[in-house]
Image (cartoon, rainbow, N blue to C red):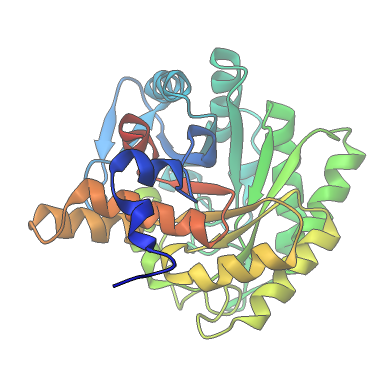
Length: 323
């Protein structure tokens, strides 16, 4: 055969394949989720997330140092609130000496250059396990937004670099931006969970924080998995309201949405490789059904190839050892 082009020429060796590689993973691409519990010198493996742990604050600080030394540059903090502090108002979320606020201060003190992002939502603090205040069986929007804005200011005062509202209430990005500005926190960024779907793949995460809804589901405020155009509308609303980074969640099952969002905005786009997606790979690898390292890297490359500038990933610490 006489061919004008042989595409296999660029696949002939590992060196050549690396030279022409279009998508490359870097340490700075990743945001590492961290689950924090009260106590001292304790870690608890999350049963539905094999190999992933909740840490007490002292160990969380040590892990943050370790991550930074590996080249990772950002963490996203979640706290497990004790049951006795949960209510329907989010009161503990505003406690200046609460676990989240203490965690922010401790990590920023120990690793000042690490970018600390914080979860802003009421479900860890809610006696109902919902992301908002419940009235007559309904998760109400405007009263919830008021608390979320105060919560964001509380995190900023503790030293958070970015607040990350994950609730999907209408108008909360604008309200948070306004309250941050009024409080003088003009340098605090907003990572908006802009297109967060009502997904079944959050189950292990809810185990990690004991934050499963006590009644019903979250379909009245999180997005319908059947919808695509709605995601763009949600993202553009958040951009107009003052978001600095927009995020799609989940990641692997919504690669088309990541690509469409990337083409619709000029802001950085993040994607959350969620707990259920993590646990699926873990389970399949444990059963010998696929190669663990190859599966993790292929899935992560797919997320970045789709258009994600940043990836929140439970695999990030291991990926740093491989790339």
